[in-house]
Length: 132
Image (cartoon, rainbow, N blue to C red; front, side, top):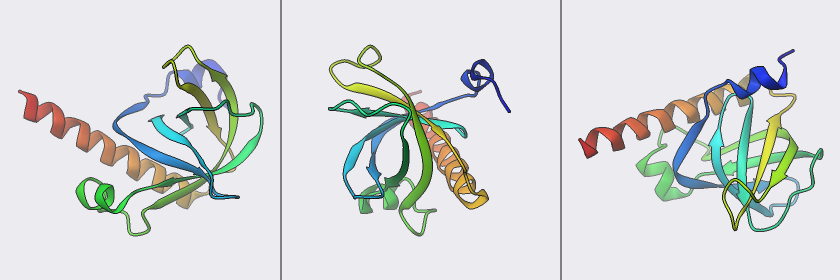
């Protein structure tokens, strides 16, 4: 099992546009995805999120996002289990940042997350290439 310090070394993908993250158990908007790695996500929200609570989170791609950037995904939804680990206003005020650690991740969920990370990398490099 990885230590907290080892997990912090995993490269995170910061998004050029925020994707919506929902609580799959009730459909409520939790916030917006700020960064993602194969072990966790950071979500920006207006309200604090309870720490050390387990969630089933769902990233939903709008039709526009799916068509423009993520047309690789058929379902336009990525669902995964995560536990909130910390919550802070210091990262991106006035929004509240919450770190989630992925838990009990199925191979299919991990594949979808890694595919999203790859698409974010591709999109990031497209943006950089167009600026030069």
